[in-house]
Length: 330
Ligand code: SF4
Image (cartoon, rainbow, N blue to C red):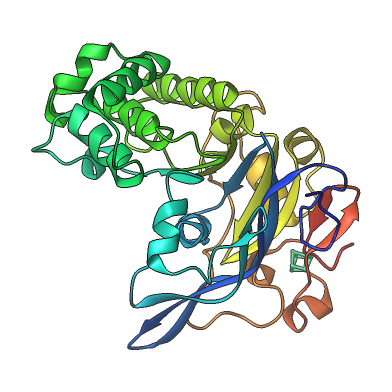
């Protein structure tokens, strides 16, 4: 299937593996409806590494969870489409989606510490994951799969006999990466896979993800707030602000020539483009998603705002080939 322009971030001529169109996720609270993700659209191409970056509360992790159908009440997917190849995911029953999860699209979770069952050995986690999809898999087949996967993520096969508490944080995260690829999915979603890890281990985990991605040829969505770390890994980056995608571009172009004022401030706050750095230095606070401002959601903080910015919301438009931005300046 080839993409055509029509979904933000689509690139003509490349094979498309995942398409998210007008995704909306809302949370019902006693104070009212929170629009955590509001009209997000992007495409992912085969073998591509796509990043989603944003501050806490920007909707990046919620977007990832929605793709995996892991939004729990009081949250709900309020609209939009998520297509994996020809298949529409939102309409699938739980059982149908269970077949897709892990086999075609898998997630490396945010907190490896909490996602492994503390009373099960690593080997048992692999058994459970494999047998959930391949009931007839024999112990020998599972052992062979573990012997192949653990070295791929830089761990010795013997680690399969350990309990999670016997592994370091970085090792646990590598186990999670190995578990995510146990059925060779076409898409891997990694949600802040290096949060709570120190800088050296972060790098090792990112290298592991890179190795795995190259070996499988899978497409990856990497979600994070560390612009420097993302910039070293992704081919294209989507910048999220207050539940919306405000810019999408190839990473080199985005770093060299960001169009949206929010992206410009983020990139200007990095120590250098090559070094790692986290969001800082953007004046003001993100808006309340319960009572968002009118017009462009960034206008209260924007140093370049125009008269219409507080009235009219700018749509995400392709300003240059492959470079999309939601801003009245263009
Ligand atoms: Fe700033 Fe206006 Fe662009 Fe929003 S639309 S980012 S307020 S210039």
